[in-house]
Image (tube, rainbow, N blue to C red; front, side, top):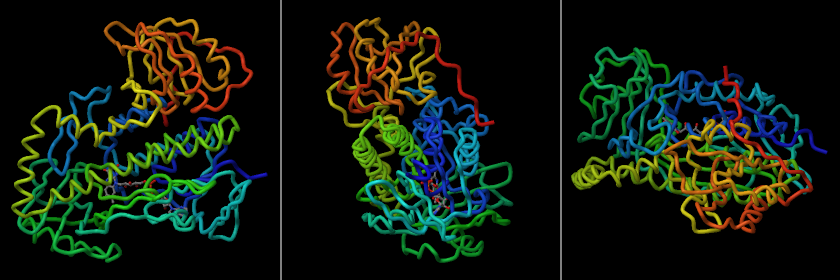
Length: 503
Ligand SMILES: Cc1cc2nc3c(=O)[nH]c(=O)nc-3n(C[C@H](O)[C@H](O)[C@H](O)COP(=O)(O)OP(=O)(O)OC[C@H]3O[C@@H](n4cnc5c(N)ncnc54)[C@H](O)[C@@H]3O)c2cc1C
């Protein structure tokens, strides 16, 4: 008998998002966080991307984030702007919102869902057997769980103890960062330039504070070398020729462009997510977003397994789906930092790419990659919708994302297909059959789809086609486990009322 089904190590954005997903599924979860207090001064990430916003919207949580954030029309690829305003989404922008605020909102939500968060609780060891994992803490106590998820950041203790290798590429440059006040700031809110001795950015983060970043390509500093206001000033003076009257630092830090990824995301009952599974240079602001998206992929699977509905094998699909996504992120950040170099050849390459970005198809391809709207998981079948995120169609009553507020799988019948009910009945405790009509002008070209709890399409029947019910049964079995002896449960629109927002 275990103390709790799931222990999560780390209350960063990944661990908290995972805790929210599990809490929503009614699973008892314990989060162990080394820090005694939430991080407030150090706020690494500064933006939510489209797919992350869509995922929060799927849970009815986005309004609280939108209220506190500021929309940004562009994201960038290596500093080359990518206009998002014509992206196919309800949220065609990035949301400027500090990581500390994201963590605060998620922590509040987790508390509402009954998640237990223990601070000042550092995980120092674990051992696992067929029935569970015993997690050891620095204070000498231990907790027994069915599964342990290491969301404990780039230097993950869980990853190390699990013996999971972390291959990749080492740092080739040095970045210094300061959240500071400026007596003479540049006129633009976002000012970035490449000059002879490196690259620098000055980003307006609030009424009177700025994030200043310098990138030097001629040396690699140790990550733990201290940064002072004077070292940052010296670097900025060398590259930009001015320090913009920098003073009153809130946070100073240094990082490189090492890009590494866990070779396995799972060893038995121990899994990794977020920075514990992948690190890379924060180019394009993808790290926090990728971690939160890992959590949404993993949460419903873990819930189904600990409830005994789905076999443990379902957890292997987490690595199969998410490892390639992060590998691609590592790849694109390497390309972005390579393009920052300040030699003439790189300048020529940037000009060519800048020109190509003028072509809508190229811009949208890169924007889809940074925003993660192009994520597609491998699925049986050839239909282009399979594995992709379900578009948030307007329905006659409500819209599709509202159907996912409770994180249950949905068979959405848009074409009035009576045979679906007889199939779905076997999974009635795990999937809802929703009969709805698309609003006028809101077409998908499909009569029915199976939408997983994370919003990805796992079965589709196109308009006018005979539905392949065997394929639907197979998809339900793959994603939700074998059928049970349950009665039919059909919901007709209107959609569910939205969940309460974090505050
Ligand atoms: C300068 C900078 C800018 C960035 N900008 C962006 C951006 O704009 N967009 C973006 O998406 N990403 C950005 N990132 C990346 C982003 O900050 C990380 O990807 C994100 O923090 C990862 O979240 P996480 O929850 O996986 O890990 P973390 O945020 O590192 O959280 C891990 C948590 O685990 C705790 N912990 C560690 N060890 C233990 C242990 N043994 N026991 C218990 N608890 C433990 C830690 O205290 C921490 O709270 C940026 C990073 C940097 C450095």
